[in-house]
Image 1 (tube, helix red, strand yellow):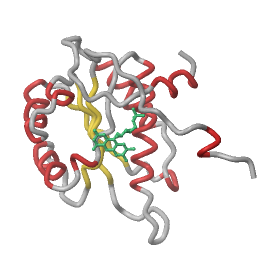
Image 2 (spheres, helix red, strand yellow; image 1 turned 135 degrees about the horizontal axis):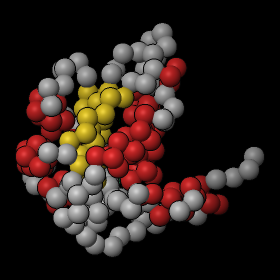
Image 3 (spheres, protein in one colour; image 1 turned 45 degrees about the vertical axis):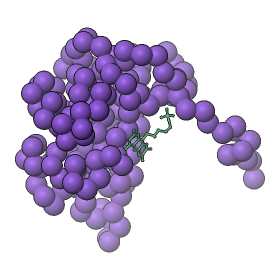
Length: 170
Ligand SMILES: Cc1cc2nc3c(=O)[nH]c(=O)nc-3n(C[C@H](O)[C@H](O)[C@H](O)COP(=O)(O)O)c2cc1C
């Protein structure tokens, strides 16, 4: 799959995963793609916690009312943000984390797995509870979680507006 096909075939998957395990080697490749992402001032403010122990995945999935995509995930990648300003008073941790997340979603797709960018659903309490389980210092923010596995059902990306609706040459 070339890079453009990897981008256009990526989709948010919220269903159950098959029993097929995701080897650590692949989880490392995925997270390396996140590490390779750009970051403001090269501050590299995102830290990645990789959860592949079934008991810990189950404890985290419970916090999300056992939604299938978390409950059946073979790996959870949790992005933790260091909110320290990177340039004077300017912080780029949200953008850093987003860039890393997109790289990882593409790597996940390229390797034949699926995922979904879980952000809204872990804001606040759930993120804090995940942080406690993973012993994340309270000054850091658990921001995005990516469940990883082989999708049980077929899915495709949500429809996007056309090029002309969203872009133009000036
Ligand atoms: C910043 C951001 C936050 C998101 N938060 C969630 C979320 O909490 N739960 C969820 O199911 N999907 C979440 N998504 C996934 C979007 O719903 C999804 O990308 C969008 O519907 C387009 O579908 P596609 O990814 O298949 O192209 C989030 C995506 C982004 C970029």
